[in-house]
Image (tube, rainbow, N blue to C red; front, side, top):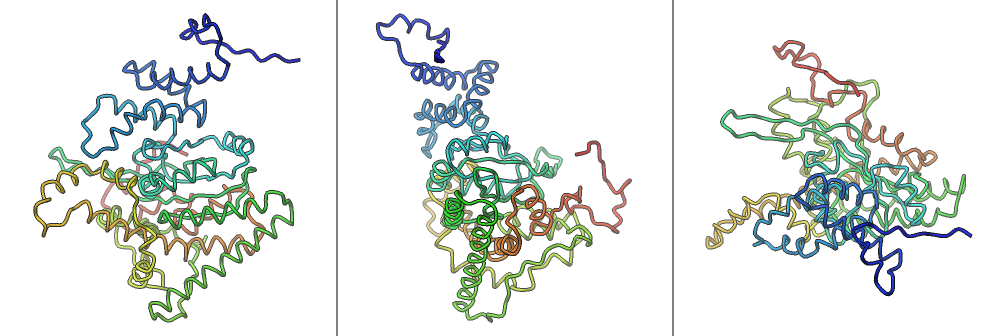
Length: 458
């Protein structure tokens, strides 16, 4: 018979003298408690070691950090909270253990090693939600859409709870995200990421594709999409081979029919000709790489961030127009029909406000001026409007195309293979273009080597 032994950390050696020695589980809890306290130590070496150990513990390591510092997190959530010298260290620890920037607002643990995520999914009997993005989720400057995921989805209380309870979370960087710094020469700098899109793949515990949610969705529709995919995943859990493929194919055919019916109903509500189609024209593999401006139009919420810079750094791409099937005004009108489903919840609002402290100051200064609109509320309203339009475009155009792909052929088992197609044909950022559409062929720049420098290879 194998005997399990419990090794006592030196720090707690004195506890062994107690009349009743604690169980191994108690020692494990005490160890996590100690690590959670050390993770915010002013001693950077001790903090780094503790953070590394907590990260290795998986979700329990993050849970220990969140529980240990719950009072500090609650205090920080108050709008009038004073600056706490320990807060930067706590935030750094949470981001590193959870592998997500702004982890304090979501409380989510993300795997970055797919094999570990798959092993955890099999143990927990849960599906995997695998995010693919440009840049890294644990950095402030990941691609714009992933930043909106962090602020409007993962910080949403209902979304974060559902993800924590029903999925094993994983993310993988598709490629580095292009970053741009504009130096105004007087101490002011403007920093932005310039292009990129993101997608959530719903996978079974064996890592096989069930469905995918491309781009940004409102929280309500994001949850609906996850719930539908999780349900078909459960139905297919006991199926294999042809039987599983047929069940998934029927699911995607059914969803494609439902999306088309919803599209027709929306057009009818707007008294718009029902002849408008939903086909998202795939990129031709033989065509020139799509421009960054055209790719930016795929994600409406990030357009206001990226488009002003793109238009000033590139010749205008005449191909970068709205899809011929529906113009911008039609999409905006359809989005208004679904506006109630994209309201940003208090948790997400708090994170957005924390990232824009100047808006809070401006709002305070104008409280007594009833005719002056709170700039923060205006920002929220504009953001919700953009998310509503992204939601309908992503569902009606991009998601319907993915359903079409997966309903007319055997469902993709290899998520990386499907992801390459998504980025090339839907997001218009193929991995064959090292410049992500930011270089315009045939245009003279007046710079040596067209201003292109390549010091590393991927």
